[in-house]
Length: 138
View 1 (cartoon, rainbow, N blue to C red):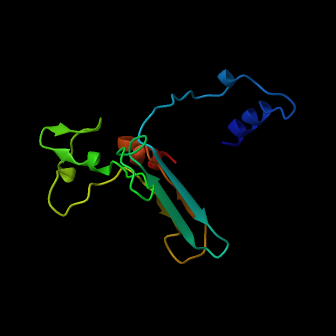
View 2 (cartoon, helix red, strand yellow):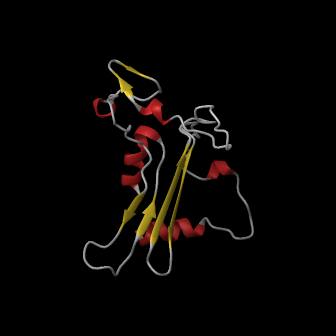
């Protein structure tokens, strides 16, 4: 609301820095999969998403002769009544021949429902089971 925005504006002082305790809400920093996303929208309305994941820090720990560090995406598969990472086993990710594991990386592009003109939004989340709910909250 405008009144809430005005009250928040009164808290802004461009010439002074405040303790981080003043800023709410407090969020804990969680360690998790080593992943990142870059989403870029250019002036020509092209949108490019680059997703990079080793899954775990240092990936699988295997480096190819050319120096490429391989990811550990195989850990995203579920085994019956067991999983290799901290997530809940999911039937959609049961290991099968010729199957790729579903990923928790979630690059998201939102565009107008009709036509190409309007406001676009590009965002991403990589926080495992919480990725979808964090995108929805934005």
